[in-house]
Image (spheres, rainbow, N blue to C red):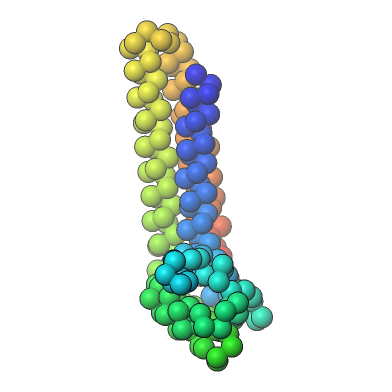
Length: 184
C-alpha cells in the first residue's frame, strides 16, 4: 500500500510543478525568459519552443533579447510572440528581436494577483481530487477485503496529511508570487 500512497504523492508533486511553471510565465514587470516558455515557433513546419530556435538573454532589467540561430526565423519568431498572450510587442532590428517590459500599473498588478490566486485555487482543487481518488481506491481495497478497516483509516489519515502538506505548499507559492508582483 505504501507504493500506491507514493504514487498519489507523486501526482500531488506534479501538480505543484505545473503551478510553479504557470507562475514562471507570469511577468512581474521585469524581464524573465520564462515568460516565453509557452511560445512555439513554426520552425520549417515543426512547432518548436522559442528557446530552441535562438538564444534568449536579459541585457537589461526590463529587456529580453532573442538572437535566432537562423536569421530567416526572425519573422516567424516575431509572429509567434505577437500571437501569444504576453502583451508585449517585439521590436525586430533585422539581427535580433527585443522585448521591452513596461512598468506594471497598480491595476495590472492587482489583476495578476487575482490570477495567481485563481491558479493557486485550481491547484488546490487538483490536490483535493487526487485525495478523493486515493481514498476511493483504498475504500475499494477495504471492500474487496484486501486491507482491514484499521489499514483504511491509517491510509486515509496519511493521504489527508499529504493533502495538508501540499495545500500549505501551494499557499506559500501563491503568497510568494503575489508579493513579487505587488512589489514596486
